[in-house]
Image (cartoon, rainbow, N blue to C red):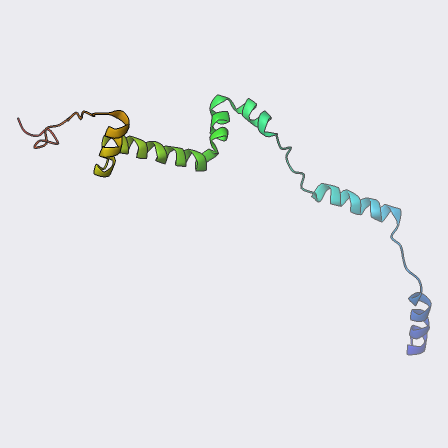
Length: 116
């Protein structure tokens, strides 16, 4: 085939577009359906709490790890300040609650209970 015949053939084909057949499109769509990732159905917050139980619902209401860790830190700080208040708070607690009494659980010389 010489260049003139090739040019004539390409000129004839240049204005036409080839559409894929129905069989080809059906096979492409079938392959696409099998390759698609289908997301799992997502339960609403009420369904998830109801299915998971009481503690999971409470855990979700408190905010998960972030909320519960903050709540635990506040509880520990409250217990710490309750048992060993700083000197600057002693006047405030006496003003609010009146005269306070302190109880010593260990003798000051024998903190670990090693003597006698």
